[in-house]
Image (tube, rainbow, N blue to C red):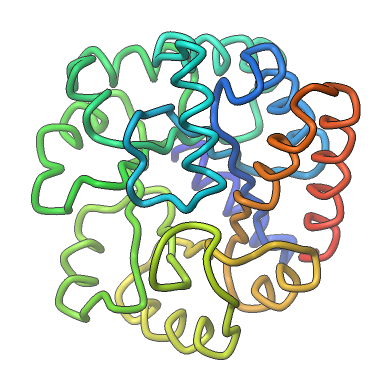
Length: 266
């Protein structure tokens, strides 16, 4: 059993919802990112999604897109991302780590080399935003060899036929994009989210996490009543952008919001 599925199994036994925060690796500096990963784990994160910086983050809204731009401008690459995970694993073997990003850097790295390096560093899952399910075979084959979960995005517009197709390949958990559009956009309709969760569970045996539009503990609590995981990104990345020049305050505020959300959903 993968670390991710083991995390969900343990949470299910306690009737708890997973908290999955997102930050972009290298945003505000590699040292700060590393400190934030530890802070998120200490503040209740069960799994941490770590963004792999990319120059054209087309699926992301302004807040997260700018975090990619800042990290790319600082020269942050996949080697740096793996190094953050590796140092985290020296102290923490229980929190899941998922790398989230785009196809191009992975292709440049090479699927086999990427999978081996990710496994060596201690990565548990990969989510590739712009790789359609029809094109994942080669990458999935390499990830399967080293026991890394391949996680898929599902949207409100995803058809039943496509849900069935994804269900045959996905491992770890499903990331439900609760809003149409880019990250950080719009107001969340919790009733609509619950409707889609019910529909997806006709196809998925895996846990389903809900992301996009969850900006505070109150919304997180509402979503967490039916979702297996609550995923929060833009609200945390906004703090990093605002306080990038004041490391201590930034880390404190990120930890505070993370703890509020973690406590609210459980």
